Length: 86
Image 1: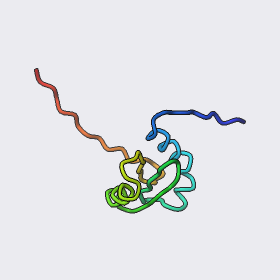
Image 2: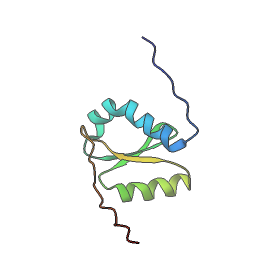
Image 3: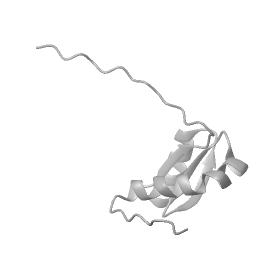
């Protein structure tokens, strides 16, 4: 069975897809931690996403990188939207 390859011009979308492809491996190594991906590679991990983000920014500069928590069931945060009044 052939896997479909989806090309994208959105670098963050590409990093997110790399995260999804690598998730089984990530779960074995980094479950419960945050990982950072840049150019499809894991470039860092930490229990604190803000510290990880600062380290990656310091190392690579202002480039698109992706940080996500490695978990079996993704956490969903519900943020109430403000009501619009006329």
